[in-house]
Length: 335
Figure 1 (tube, rainbow, N blue to C red):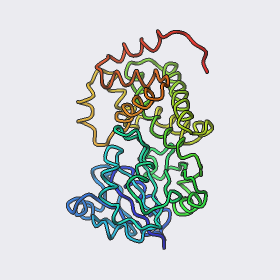
Figure 2 (figure 1 turned 180 degrees about the horizontal axis):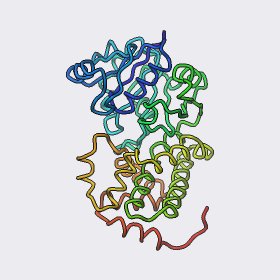
Figure 3 (figure 1 turned 30 degrees about the vertical axis):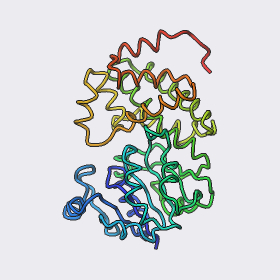
């Protein structure tokens, strides 16, 4: 029997718990909550009514707020918490992590203060786990489609192919196909940056600009994430894969995407503050935009689309004015 512990009863954390419990019934799943109150609520309702109402927990999911119960002697620890609380969560659990556990980040973001990717934060905070046992999950994974039993593919990236193979064996099922990739940098940068493009795409929808404008934004967003990723040491080919183009298409095309929703509401004239206060889930693209702009400035990399999104989010530039500034830039070659 394989023991899997998922840190974070978020939409994505709960989805991964339920899908794996159903697809791999021999696994023992632990869903680690923040408090006894949260544990009691989930157990009594036998579902996560806040994020995924109507989807019951299978019998092989154990809900607990006990870090020792959830994490000791665990084969695979999946971290499914927002990037803004990622380090804090690691600090809370690091004393309970076994040295032979595989740590899998399912979080798409970049830490604002440090500019670090999630796997880099794991390396900083969890000293007793080798680099080979640290990996990341990313791809076109809209949680509500997955929880409904609709098929999807994703990618797990690690520097060690044995770790990739182990995670594939644990999580792969007939509805959740896992590919492998050794380019951790590329997979993480793609997964984080696609949310910036999703906000831009949503803004375009909110302004009723149509499919031509939207496809242009998606394409230029792909160019920007590739440009930054390669400069940071990623492989260009990764951005044409599931973590790059695949996730970008799903996120920018689906009304289920919280980043696309946020962008659409910005385009329709709502303020960021009002939008965020009304959202149940975190739109990772907001904090990622800050982090990416900091990185691009320090590395002197041109990121006009990300800069336009930044101005709308944090400098009170009107979406239409940001669009005009993009369109009125000096002409250049496409590549």
